[in-house]
Image 1 (cartoon, rainbow, N blue to C red):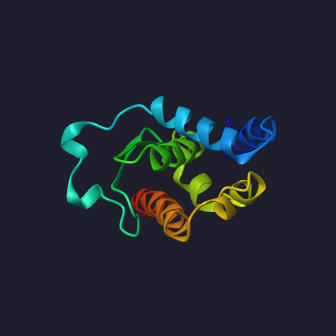
Image 2 (image 1 turned 90 degrees about the vertical axis):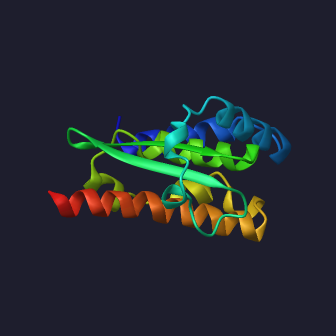
Length: 139
């Protein structure tokens, strides 16, 4: 599935909820279903800088696709990284680099996060794109 299609799917899912409390609950639910990162990957170099809570992100190249795993010590943050992994995992580095991030605004995520969480979201996206750039450079 293409990044744009996954993003549209997420926008549709979020449009089903009437208010932000329901959306927060959904984000938390998504975090509970996040495939866990290996314990040995919970190291300093995989910690995302700029996040209020601890978020570990690991990217590995599998054939021509990047596969991400992540974890967080905060339930809401875990849900946010789960959304990003759903969008970007199993995509090519070039597609990740070129991806438009408008869906974040379309679901209203950034405007409903505290400033520190919004900064963390930006840092998560930046780290995902940096993995893709590194893998693309190796090609």
